[in-house]
Image 1 (tube, rainbow, N blue to C red):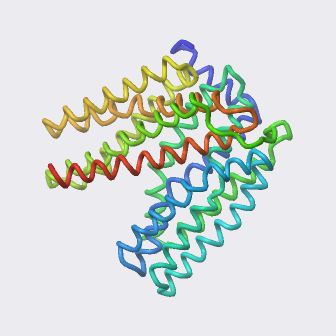
Image 2: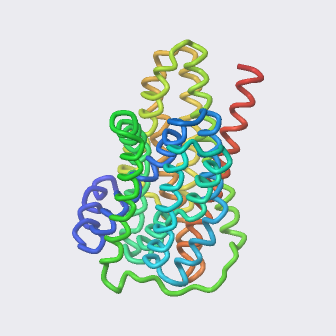
Length: 360
């Protein structure tokens, strides 16, 4: 696919009504993902310490990582919508219980437990939507679909925290929580209104094969590098007494990632050689960001360049995972990818924090 054919590929994607509805559901599902961590943090921190709020966010993140593959497997067997509806109901109950507990001044253990319970039953919309993209976009449009998914995911992680914090501090934490749940429900409803041909064949139990295991390891290491870079960049600006710059710089990285996803990801999502090239490009971008640290003002120029290959690399990983998925196990495979990336991100952040505390 040439550069000139990138725009027509997006036009072709949106020309199909079914795929347009999938794109709308994807956007609605991604924004709550960007909102949820800061929402949980602010709901708990309103009436408890920041330490308890941080543990609640950790409990939520760990919960969703632990059960992600199981929820994906259930979606493959019984359909995404029934599982998303059942999980969504339990998700709402857990988050509302967290809010009620915070307002009532409940013990820390109950608050952390409610947040972890919400993570355990988080509706599997993200892996499910990728499975639907893979099944119904077709070979020609699948790279474009995964590139769009990666761009929307990055946009959700930029806009979601801003929206959630504005609602939680300007109105009430309950407002952010209510919008989060409403958007999740709307995404589920749009998927439920899709034609029958969007159903995914039932699956049996599958274990990741050697090729998929290597891909999962690659995804874990890539996300570890990204999380470590976020922590390191924040530590750098803090060291220079400019902590205010961390948000704009990280947003620049995400904006570069969105641009790269839309421009490069549509061309490269399904090809193995392209994945290697994009990962090398992402590493080069992070090396450029490191070099820019020698002269702090250059960081503003290097940050979007550092992100340019990150989004396309994620799109390529999603596409490779879809291609490596056993028949009828697309959602479970994407859920494994999500879980292993969450684990890699946590490890990268922890490692970077340890290095910063030891060496500066």
